[in-house]
Length: 236
Image 1 (cartoon, helix red, strand yellow):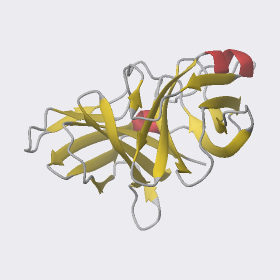
Image 2 (cartoon, helix red, strand yellow):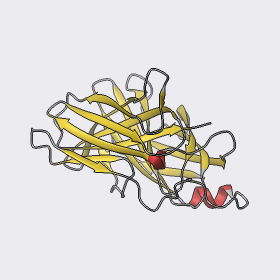
Image 3 (spheres, one colour):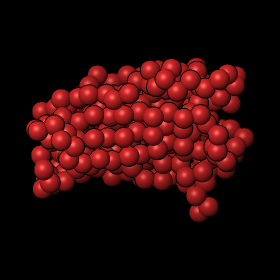
């Protein structure tokens, strides 16, 4: 199902829902720290194996979109929450639509293992030198989880901030090895998203092993007063 959004080409925000991952607030040009862990998520992250209903899962995935700009690029960020009771592999397809209703750009991102009750964030971009867009559409394509296992529900995250960065600390409290764990850090000034950064938070094996803690730093050259961090990873 496509989600339609008409946009004005300025930084924009839709009301943010509760999130899974880590959040820091009230930096006040100093540093602070907070801890958050997802709630109401089964430790296995997989509901009893009922028949997978992709339409029902798709209807229960909530999307919160953001746009922000820099000098040369439009950035699109989608925060997605799995409100269904089933884990899935989720593909997110972004289409930019021109003023004549033609598709001028497309981007695709896949979340290998999306646990029920958790949230992830994905980031897309569009060069301002390319054709201007009038609106954008997201299409969500959930599939039954077969090749991966969910781990994000067992990743405990802490964030501390300074004036120009966030330090992200992630501990694997589960029994599975979390592979290729990626963070997306959203920096806000008030209600406005001013910057989004993403990178990996893993060891030299590209993993966070059971009981292990890994750290990463996310820099931001914009003024911000709060940070929200979302995690994405999986296990085989």
